[in-house]
Image 1 (spheres, rainbow over the protein chains, first blue to last red):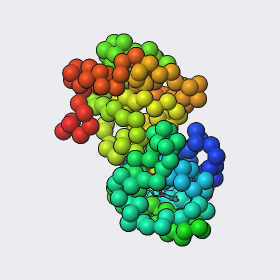
Image 2: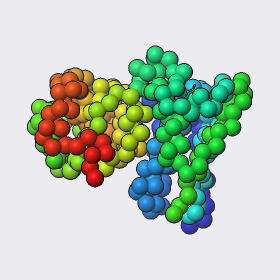
Image 3: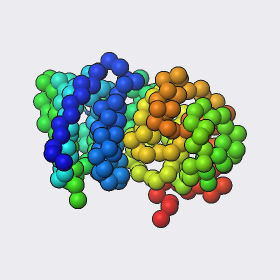
Image 4: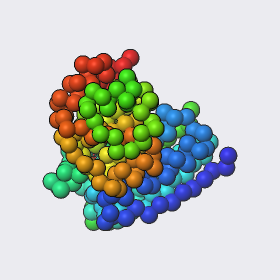
Length: 140
Length: 117
Ligand SMILES: Nc1ncnc2c1ncn2[C@@H]1O[C@H](COP(=O)(O)OP(=O)(O)OP(=O)(O)O)[C@@H](O)[C@H]1O
Ligand SMILES: [Mg+2]
């Protein structure tokens, strides 16, 4: 298998569509025959990152690079940025509105979950400019 | 137990995927906050939730959850039924409240997250 790159625009104004990119990548990985446990880890971490782009940053761009050794997914937004990454990484920390909580999100568990399921996570963020989250998954 | 047994135990309505009721369920999770669901992976699990929007179906899809039960008599939206049908995920509804629904399934032998060795 050669390496494959997939790109998705994630709209920031349609919460019901959040997760479509993660779902598409999940199905692609399944078709390519990756191990189910790995696919599940990738899908969960991606989904958390995709939801974050929608609820905190008005959408963005997801790029997945898939090769036999590594799956790498980046989530780039031009949202408000994260002022304190250490604080944002704490379990239970959330700035989500009551409205977002009513939608089932805002437990402050997304970033910790992403860190737990990815082999490597890098956050690059500038307040007022945007955030890019890079998730990496090694293939055994 | 099978999804079919959950339908009986919770006196549930089946909104889609009737053909999948013989799927085995080994674990359960009751939650309205999706990131709490996403924190613990379980195999062959059922998700009980009061959350009525397509993200409960998405969450189940990402987790490889095999069945969703809407509690407290909540009706799914057409978008939820459509997505669940597309993903072959049986979507059920019960009048029972979260605590009772979880208790009934637990008493009937369904384990909580992480209990299964
Ligand atoms: N892409 C982003 N842009 C701006 N802020 C972000 C972004 N992602 C996360 N944050 C900030 O980090 C906080 C913690 O994120 P995390 O995903 O852990 O929790 P949450 O999204 O608030 O709730 P949950 O993920 O449990 O639904 C958020 O509340 C928000 O303040
Ligand atoms: Mg989040």
